[in-house]
Amino acid sequence: MNKINRVAIVGGTHGNEFTGVYLLKLFEQNLNLVKRPSFETLTLLGNPEAFKESRRYIHKDLNRSFFSQDLQNSILTGYEAMRAKVIEKMLGPKGKSQVDVIVDLHSTTSNMGLSILLGELHPFTLQLAAYLTSINPEVKVCYTPLEQESNLLRSLCDFGFAIEVGPVAQAVLNAELFQKTEELVYAVLDYLERRNQGIIENINSPLTLYRFGGVIDFPRNEHGEIKAMIHPQLQFQDYQPLHPGDPIFLTFDGQAIAYTGTSTVYPIFINEAAYYEKGIAMCLTEKQQLKNS
Image 1 (cartoon, rainbow, N blue to C red):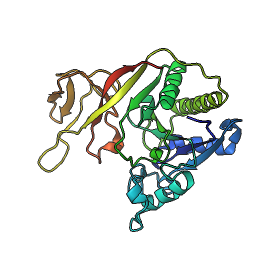
Image 2 (image 1 turned 60 degrees about the vertical axis):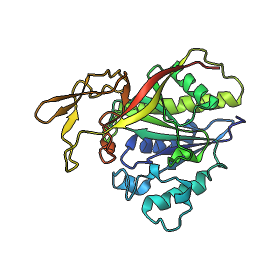
Image 3 (image 1 turned 180 degrees about the vertical axis):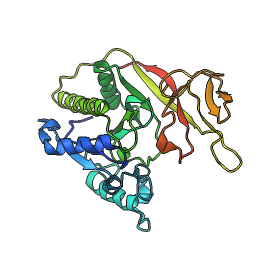
Image 4 (image 1 turned 135 degrees about the horizontal axis):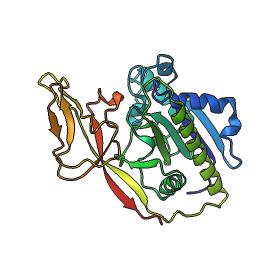
């Protein structure tokens, strides 16, 4: 990868995730916080209308609105469809992005701590992730292989990734996690600056990676209604091992439902509030160790 010239920090892609929104406000009030000598830093509020209403979105999830065919479809006129086209003009187009790196700030009601979400295992992003985990052991790295084309906002750029922080309730600020996210953003920018200056040292220790392997929905009745909850032993246990036979759900009358998989997995986004409508109780990952080269 060549020199980094422009970096975009996006917050409020989901309007009820306040951490990113108020970090943008902080940065815009004092640009020196995110200014670095060797590249330009842009800030962008993703979904301002949803933020005004403290909602995740108005018509459609903005972070699922960036398929090329949708961006080029003049018939799609919902708010997020139109907003995605505006954002693409500012940051895109895909394949010829006007920015080199996109940092998309998110928060979650799940106990994800400080998480970096990658869609590609490119040496550049892997080295960045390894650096961040080396300076802060709290940072976890998740990898969800993208399809041939992604509909995520960060897919506008070849080197886009998300920072996911939690647990934070929707439309609420958590001071501790706000500050930790702020520090992580500065660490990213400092790394990019040092890389431009050619003074980054390689991290030789293996990188722990949580590779997406699928999702599990809640048990439902014939009407599609949820008939069980996340089991108390699993609640807030993101990134912890889940073994075959471990309790995973609890019915309303107190009956435990066990995990029926055949191997140990590491659930993330456990009981994420925004995923109820998507039919997702949690995502399952496999834990891997990658050697840095």
